[in-house]
Each structure stands twice: as structure tokens, then as C-alpha cells.
Amino acid sequence: MKIKFRIRRYNPADAETPEPYYQAYSVEVSEGMTVLEALLKIEEEEDPTLSFRKSCRSAICGSCAMTVNGFARLTCSLQILPEYKKMGEMTIEPLANYRPIKDLVVDMEPFWSKIDKVTPYLTPTEKSIGNPVTAEAQERIDDSQRCIMCGCCNAECNSLEIDGYFIGPAASAKAWRFVGDIREGQEGRRLAKLSEEHGVWDCVRCIHCTQYCPKDVKPLKQIELLRSAAMKEGILENPGAKHVAAMADSVERVGRLDEAAMTFKTLGFLRSLGMIPMGIKLELHGKMPHPYIRPQIDKIDEVRKVYEEIDRKAGRKPGKKKE
Amino acid sequence: MAGKLRYAYYPGCVSQHMTKETNDTTRLVAGMLGIELHDMPKANCCGAGLLTDYDYPLYIALNARIFAEAEAMGMDIMTICSTCLMVMSTANRDLKKDRKLLDETNKVLAKIGLVYSGKTEVKQLLWVLAGDYGLENLKRQVKRPLDWLKVAPFYGCHSLRPSDALGFDDPEKPWSLEATIKALGAEPVEYRGKTKCCGFQVDLVAEKTAEKMTAVRLLDGKSRGANCFVTPCPFCHINLDNYQRLAEKAVDKKIEMPVFHLSQLVGLAMGLSPAAMGLGRHLVSPEKVVR
Image 1: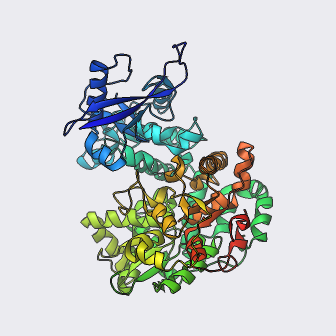
Image 2: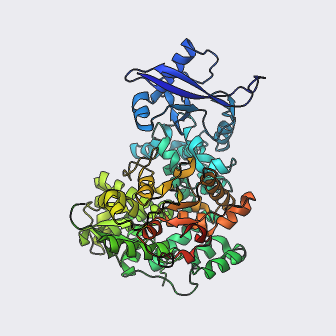
């Protein structure tokens, strides 16, 4: 069947049309044909000026990621017919969150500089290099090792959409690849750096990265592992870790989210003062958390026992009693 | 609709206080629709994603404790919070597909005399209306079609992703919220940001990101002609409504966009008064779009 492809064209060097515009192409599509194959067909048979990146055509090289019908996809592994049947259109645009250079080609430099920032190689000590890589040790970093650096996750990342300095899902997954490696010797230094502003705590947990990763790297899971590891390493003096610690404390104490305590513990005294004007507005609408009356679930002792058991199973001393 | 709908009701922490209006209106509306909501007085917080960062086995065990309570009640869970939905569904997915994890978790639950066999399903109000109850049935309950409203549906992240844990709607082409808006007689507005994030998770961690993100979403819907927003998630509501003034400041633009909880929109269409819907609790008054 013939399907209309709507493709975003852009060539800043073209004096006549330097601004982006959409161009339509009609492509004869057969069963099993991929989006990349359609683009190659357009380029070969209809319009050799159409620019896009591609190489292996086997979902290994990571070159051909683009925005298809609004979402970042690896075009060599995305079949046209099921996609068209579901979405009712075929709109191809460059990856979001990157600067377009020409047509569907984007500037990947910010992607690579973020990867560079997490020191993407092993930095072992003389002792740690000898740690045996068991099947279990390998499994911890399996997900992160599948990354082909296509950039889909960073294109979908809602936090990066707003804050270009955010380290982003791709570099975070890469960071876990080395923090989680049994032979690594500098985990503490790495985790401290990742806990800084624009680091892993700035992830908004939109889950786009994990949903749209074509290799199932699960970047959000790697971010969660980094956050957990940072807290266990004792890197707690930052708003993200304080927020999580306050939540863990709140649930153990009353079984629920204690909004007032959470805010105060995350922000600290001085920053909490800055919340007073908002607090007054909330209070006027009956929305201010009560500072003294704590909500508590029935059978809170069961929840505390769960905390104790988890600590015991992990070989940790049970946390201090919070009454 | 087959038989009486009964759910173990899990409103989530935030709707028991800050966004109490959605808890109150959900109970009211469910009662009128004949949907039974049974309280879970023992249920603990799901962890809102933060406990996942803290300690994975603890997160799983605490969620299994919630599921065990519902299982003993013989009911599936209905929540009115998308974050609770996502966090519980993700834990449930892991427990159901990993026998070893379920066994280890049950060893912890055994210490408090509980067991979870993996039968509980977790749903949210939106899914109950668009799925179990049925929108044709809902249409028959509409007394006052909201035909003057152009509503921007704001799913928020956690109603749609990760789809392998949630499964009800399609994250690229969601339909349930738009179809519900239509069933209530209003017009859904199409805009790109409807499946994106409100920024809530970093409200206290990276405020600038959160405020700007909220503004971008609201302006997106506004630019496509919406005169109000609706969301199935109380956390999204907090950002879109409570913090809308901060969002306006962050981008230096007036937004002035009323935001409804899903339960409120249903209640209004069923003829309930704005006062009964708790609209006075909103920071951005919906007065001008309510008749």
C-alpha cells in the first residue's frame, strides 16, 4: 500500500528556505518494511537531498534514531505497517532535545560530552581489579551494558527538555555500568559527583527513557541504583537524598507521607522559610499540612517490623526506633 | 458492567490531606454510580517512587503488604493517584514475574502474619470508569453535559508508563481520558504535552526545573485552545494548580488555567454543585468555567 510520509526538512544553508518545513512523500510500503527502509527508498528514488544518519540497519550501531509520530524510535527496528495502523500517520522529525543540523540529522555533541562527564571507563584500584567477575556480579550491570548510544532516552527525557545541563538517562546508565562493576575502585568519588546539582537526583521519573529505549537498558532503573548506592555510600547532604531519607523515615514512623516533615527535612530550616508565602496561600485553601497532628495508619507496628526484617536480611543493624 | 463493582480503595497519602477534594468527590461520585469503595485502614504509603531509590526489597515488601490486605478483602485495588498506580503496578509486575522475589517477600510478610499470593490487580479511577464501569454507562448518568468546556487531558507520566506494568492504555496514543471527557459532554483538546511530566518529583529537589516544566505543559494546552485541564493524578494537580503562580513567575507569563481532578469533572457532569466538588480549595479558581 501507498503511505504518506510527512518529513521535517531543514537546511539553514538554503537561502530560499532556511526555516524548517514539512515535505510529503508517498511510499509504496510492503509487509515488514522498516521506517529506515522507507527513508532509504525516498533518498534513492525520489529525493537525494534528504539527510539522515544510518549505518548497520540491524539495531546495533545506534545511528538512525529519529522522532516517529512524536516519540524517539530506532528507525531500523520500527516496522511501518503496525506503527501506521496504530497512529494513523507517519511523521518523521529529528530527535527532540538536540539541535537539528540538517533535515533529520542532529548535533550529538552534548550527548557525548555528558557521557564523557561520567568517566566512561573502569578506574580500578590495585586491589579491586582482582575482584572476580561472577555471574551475579555481571548480572548487576547487564542492562546498562546493552546501550548502543542511539540517544533515544535523552531525546525523550522530560528533565533534559527543561534543563539542558541535566546529566540525563544515557550518561546515568553508563555511570552505573562502572559504579556497579565489581572491579571498580572509585565508586565513592563517582557517586559524589553524580549527586551534585544537575546530577541523578534531577531526574523527574517520567519513565520516558525506559519506555522508549530500543535495547531495554532501563535507564531509570540504573538511576535508581545509583541513587540507592549513593545513599548507602553516605552521600546524604543533597536535596534528593534528603527527600528520600525523609520519606523512608516518614513511612517507618507513621506509615504514610508526612507532608510537613518531608518538606522541612528536604529543604532544611532556611529554605523552608522561603516556602512560607506559598504555605500561607495553601493554608487559606485548607491545603496546608498540619504541623502537629501526624496521620498514622492502623497497625504501624507491622510496617516497622518490615523495616526491621529487611535490615536483618541485608545483614544491617536495624535502624533506630522512631516513636 | 458485570455484577457489582467493588474495590479496595487506596486514595494515596496526598489525597487524604492536601488534595482531599478529590478523595471526597471520588467517594461521592462512586456512591452515586453504585461503585463500592472499601477502606483499607492498615494500608501504608506505596513509597511514591522514593522508596524505590532508598531500598528495593523494602519497597517491594511494603507494597506486598498493601496487596496482601486487598487480597484478604477479596478485591482489586482502586487508587486515585497515578503515582500510587505506577509504583504499586511496578512492584506487582516484579512480584508476579519473579517467583524468587515473591517467596523472599513472603518470608518478610510472614513475620507480621501476612501472605501475598500474587492475585491482586491495581487500577485507578480513570480505568474503572473507562473500563470496568464503561463509558456508555457513565454517559447515562450525565445530567448536565459540560458542552462549554474545552478540556486539555493531562494524563501525567504514571498513568501511562511503564506500559509493561500498567497495560490499560496506550502510552503513544492514549484514549481513556479523552473518551471520558467526551462521555461527560465536553470537548477534549489535543496537545503534545498531554503524556508528559508535570515535574512533581523534583518540586523540592530542582524547583526551577519543576516550575518551568509545569508552565510549559499548561501553556501547551492553553495554546491549543483549552479553557481548563483535567488530570487523574493529585500530584499533577498540585503542580498544575497549587504551584501555577510559581510556574507563571518562572516563565514570566500569565497562565490562569483552572485544573480539575477527574472526579470533579465527573461530579459536575452528574449535576453536583461546585461547592460539593470542593472547587473552593483550588488556588486557581475554576469559577469562570463552571456554570
